[in-house]
Image (cartoon, rainbow, N blue to C red; front, top):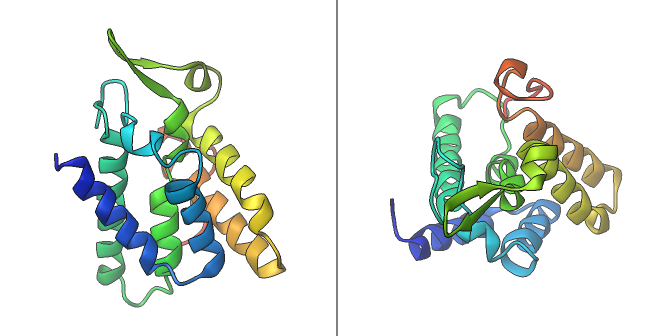
Amino acid sequence: SQPMEETKKKILEYIEQVSDKYLHDLLDIVFIKGEYRVSFFNSPGAKRYHHAYTGGLAEHTLQILEGALEMIKIYPYLDISQDMIITSALLHDIGKVKCYVNTSDGIQITKYLEDFDHIIFGITIVSRLSEELIHSDEDKKKFEHLIQIITSHHNLKDWGSPKEPKSPE
């Protein structure tokens, strides 16, 4: 576990690497200017399985992002968008910001997790925050691709994905 300031610094540096305006603006809203800019970095990643501590969500997200970027190097023959990898890795578990809460009794699950799932709530967050950013068919196509990645990030239906992946990202 690394200090949260270091995790946050690295995440913000990765956001700056995103050259696609639509994807960069979305990340800027979520992680720098928007309502989740603080809660994301304070949220646990789970109640008990992995990253079940304050800041665990950000740490898990950074680990997934760095692993995904390494995978691009392993498969150079695939047409993979680094901007989409960074964006989808950073947003894959964004729904967890409303799924867990730290209490004096430890990490508790919220009504969002009881009623929905972090994937569904993540899709809701990204959909809502993307609305104002979609100005073209190209933006809409990127948004749909991003949503498909978030939807399928657990890979298999047996592992909790509503749908299976449709792209290398």
